[in-house]
Image 1 (cartoon, one colour):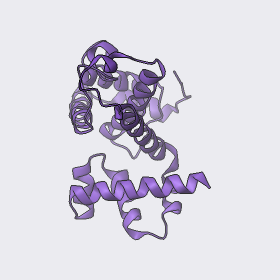
Image 2 (spheres, helix red, strand yellow):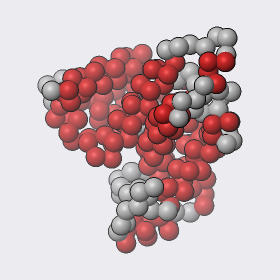
Image 3 (tube, rainbow, N blue to C red):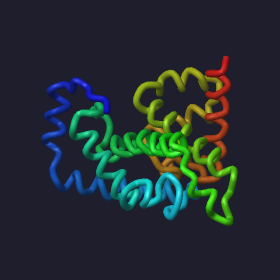
Length: 199
């Protein structure tokens, strides 16, 4: 568990957050979590987000942990970010760690299922890497990423839209395009950044 020395302004902003604001942000976070878990094809009966692995409903457990992490000073809350955006960023980081830890512990429950997909671990570790990259980029590397894709206006536009909104729908709307195009741009961006970091 990491702890930061938060500024007085950060503590004041945390303290000034009303119960209604927290409740609204928590509802938005839960919707995002539900969409991501199901959209990405996770199984809530087995796997990293199952009740057995999470000790309860994944959406409830993760959302409560995110709220607690922020309000206990484990994350800096940037003044330009909405509470919802901050919680979603924390969730991306937490979810990537949940997946990594799950497979590091060598969970065998998948092997007992007749329709087990042997590629699922690789798929889920890929999703974890993406979530981790998105969380870190938002936290530390937005300007670095912009420099990496400076020669590609389409990817710059994608980055700018992603920094403002966490959902594929929001990114697509900000860019004036559709979700399919947004997903293609995401893959292109991740591929390009992976090449740059491999150099």
